[in-house]
Image 1 (cartoon, rainbow, N blue to C red):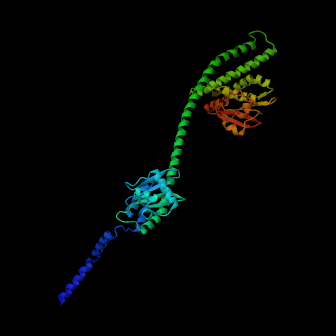
Image 2: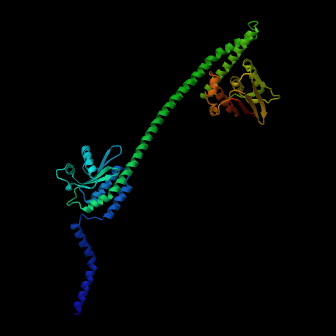
Length: 448
């Protein structure tokens, strides 16, 4: 009796030990035979969501999503058909999926415009165009992807050795919105990338054109400078001769001249003098452009240079009823400067004051020592410079608008050259102006 009870207990113990593994084995066997098309919808949603949120590129997104759906639903094929806002059609899905011709795609769109729910081929009339179209492309289910109308379709082929259930259709309807959002986001990102690419291409094209234009402008600028230099050289020799002969006549080398003749000759001499200075300005501009602009310093009495330039311009001042007011300073220090170039600067400032001053007015010129610097100032009560143009005034060939009206034949190189000369001497330009009330031009130079 004891033996029987012991054997019974042993059998129970052994059964308990092997019950769970055996149970799992039979459950797995039953599921594989009778429920082989069953799936966990929550796990499917999670997998699909990971795919949609981690995939970039529309075609890649559709291919990976189609693979996940086909694997879960056991579909023979799964593919997307999407049309973009630009009217392009894009299709992608599992390997060897059907490729819809454009006319079939448009017919598919007409079907879905009438029915926005899941379309099941087996539930349609056998003779209907919709069913014939679906059967011809081995499509069993069509899920419209809706966003302000139909933006595309999810097409599933026949289910392997079975049929789709209402649960499958419900699951597919559940993921429709998620698919639409993912596709729309990808399309939006692609549109932004396309816009950026277009803009980048336009910028590159514009930059290329700008560089080409800049090279051409530099070539033209160089040709202009070469021409100015050549023309200036050619003009300087005959003008020097003209000036020399006028000077000889004024000095009586050709005999006595009348007061009227002297007045005319003085004006001609002053004009030729200005022309010589102007040509020298052009030559210096050409030298600057060619890197041949050199400052040749020598000890110079600047007060004497200023006095000489004023004397040279005095006839022109008198002809315009203008008066230079200048008192030569006593015991002025000698400074190392390039006399000819500083002389041009003084002449340019004084000459501008002549042309842009009102008649019957004074032009005040002052030369002084301030600390370790000499300061030269020309002050007039003329037309002045508009405030919005003052910043560009010392640019090459620039002329203020009111100056162009007052003196149309000006060149715009005098102030540019003056600033270049003063900068090369380590000095500073002095400038102040009020439109309609006059201007102050000048410079400061270090004594040592």
